[in-house]
Amino acid sequence: MVKEAHDYEFILRMLLKYRDGNPHYSATNLTQAERDQLAALNYTLPAASQDPTNNEVDRVQGRLYDDESFLQYLIHLEAEYGIASYL
Image (cartoon, rainbow, N blue to C red; front, top):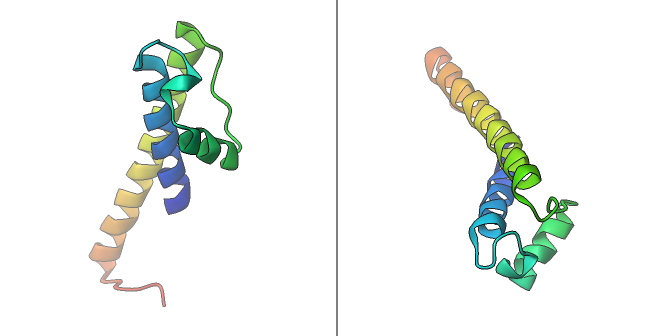
C-alpha cells in the first residue's frame, strides 16, 4: 500500500505537470525519465484535453487521499494498541 501511494503521488505530480505546463496537455512537459517511469508503472497519460485530464486528476487525487487516510488510520491503531513493529 505504501508503494501504491508513492506511485499515485508520482502520477499526480506528472498529471499536473502535463496539464499545467507550457504548452498545456503536452507530454513534452515531462522529461524522458519521467515518461519512462510512467511507462514502468504501466500508466498512460489521458487524452490531450481538459475534461479527460481533469477527471483523471480527480480520480488519482481521490485514490491518493484514500491511501493516505488508511495509512494514517493504521498508524493511529498502532499507537492506540502499543504496536511498535510488525516483526
